[in-house]
Length: 541
Image (cartoon, rainbow, N blue to C red; front, top):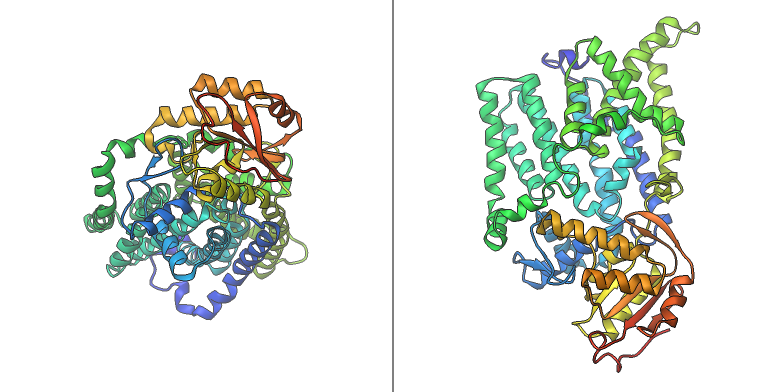
């Protein structure tokens, strides 16, 4: 059975859940192995979730009321306008179990990253009408680096659950529209509401895919009404969140954030970019770029339009590889098992059959995909313009330095932090960081771009003169400067710090060392405006 005859009464679902468990096992096993590899190679989570965890902390402190602002991320804090569901969830986990926030950001994303493979498989199984194709699709997604990057890393405490809700919701939409079963409206409505309350970009992915399912399988007034019930119903059920946010900050807070991270509709150039094969990884470049392109040609030739339209629409509207490559995995599975498999069966002199093609495809992708995914998960793959994949923004030395800052500086003390450890600093130290783009998107394009540019300028400084001049020109007057030693990252890009900056700061009369360990050095800013009242604070070594 293929996508072309999905409207028939007999479906693969009728053949039993035990067979599904066997076909799903390769993807679940691959996802589990990569999660273990990630944990063993990352004593601290990759990328950042400090802002997310501080939001959860503030929610708990406020008795689970919706906070108006989140402090410490730039002067005056940032508006709290994020969809709140996972922040409330993390707050509840912390309050009920006492688990350390950093541990939550290491474990929760990986668990959900494995869990969302289940609705992905079910959606692929019913959409494609084939368990082998669904198994290959879910296995591909399980080992795809851009999907891993955004879901298994620290920020996956929000993104991975959003993807789980979205994939479950589009599966419910398939059952609703293809089977004309109105019982799935309630499931769709609940899942769309959860997605709205979790992440805006995944909400767009949900809504776009849901609409395409309507266009493919229904296109009736009844189907349109069902879609409206799900869409508008989800917005209404989530109204307690967005109406309160607008009462705090006005409607402009939502329009201000749109586009600061690429924006909706900014992905059209990504269509061609996804078809470029990375020279450093011929197998993966071909698998995730060239094969979907060939698959689109095959599907168009067969007059099967849903998957090509889905791929192009997701890429053009959202423009993020983690969504495009999910659609691309569906196309790859169909192309390999139908087109390439049929060619091998007809042309091979050794009588290759469908079973052999499926087995070889699963074994090859499981073996090579796991190896490549494991290298990516451990940070051994060059990504981010040549920088290691899945970098840790903080280390044990950072945690110690941030603990010192919390214990040995005034609550009103302000810091400028060089490098990506800045994302975690306010949550760990509970002190204000004056320079950093995190959360500033809710203030609008101009404040966000200013903070992002200033953060990059400060992080690239390699002398006391550069640091002083950059901060002076920006009108930023911190009490302390926090500097990493050795290797660190800036927006995921790896930097190597020599002793030049530290020596320059030591020699400058403007700065005084107050704390140092193997990975971090903290300077107090001296002068009439900075550092007043700080002389009694002790230094640590």
